[in-house]
Length: 160
Length: 392
Image: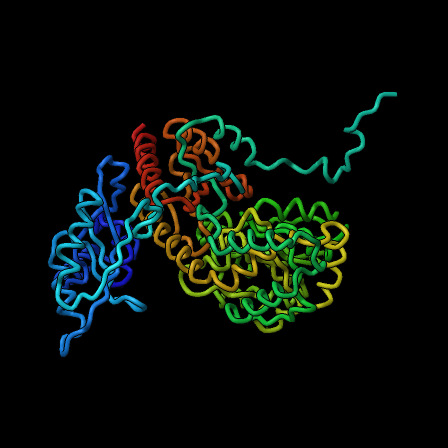
């Protein structure tokens, strides 16, 4: 039940407890209790909207930075990751497999701002060996949502 | 002498009534901003895997005929699916034909077994094609009504009362369109006793089998002594959201299959290879998508059922397919009046129950193969409509 609630919320963060209760064939009280617990346990971290900022006319520069670091004794990659994710410009940090170690996504007002952040803050952190910056040019799909989905309902209005 | 094409029409065809849905379709098509709960197909588009596999096969040049039976790999997948999913094993070489939709399979099965002088039992309300298909064979369809009080399930007692020495076959279609009725294993077992007693053939249209919400679908062919006398029909349309591909299949005893394939080879030759290629991919990689879609239908089913109950409609909770079949008798309107008025006043399209059978009069079929957002909007409109009906 817990995972079913999470799935519904992942699809629609604004869904009401009442509607969830009907959809999952349970009571509003149970849903309320589950959601409360999920929030307390920080399984649900926050509720947010998926936004097409480009369409909203807001300029933004987003880059994905591959970061190679030398892991430190006892703390491995965690300490260096923390140094990075504390910066408010950093939207996400993940440990990745492959040639690089961390994948960092950075948002700024302009490409220059992002590039400067990488050069001045990120690349200069101790144990950061090298970085590779990829600017995002266009978003097609994010959080499971296709941005310009052209798939409309083409069914006949009445069929047997 | 003037030539009148009308004089040359086969009486069997001439006397077929046109589908009761057509008239309503024309009415709806002319209107704007209608929310249609009249659609008998999934609102999901075929999984991308399936579409991509078809494009790839076209690029590779798969544009030819296949074996009359269908591509061997596809028959293999169908046999594996029927065995693993529903516990009914069939030989993929001798007991399966890939058809142009389940519709062709229904026609083929009936033509293979029935002819003039035979009677075929058809529990109603049901999908619109069984009766005409029986008529086209020259046999006589015998409509057997089912009732709201039984949640539109066929009961052994009612079935037995309609059997005559001429009865040769029965068409079963559960999960049912339009009612959403499902027969459990026990209920099917009770019916199969009657079927065995009178030595009938079963044409079992299980196209909605995957869309069973409480428990798993039971194939009547899996019950004792039923396998050899059952012609199992299903297809890709509903479970895999692949209606337009026109890929169905039939699984039955070799003796049925070897005769059915004669009709198939002379009339259809084979199902389109693009659809067959797509269907192979569907079986191999889309089971996850199927369960996701089924879960979504299930959630919508609960929403619609609750809303309808709350707004004062007499309704039972459908157990399968994606239809709900409430009674509108307490509004004092007939099925058609209700549907037309609802369409005119609130722009919600539903299908009058009498389009599916005489015993469907007083009911409407609502499909919940529509997004939750649209469904809720449709329910709001229907509620407003009903409160006007009840207050006037």
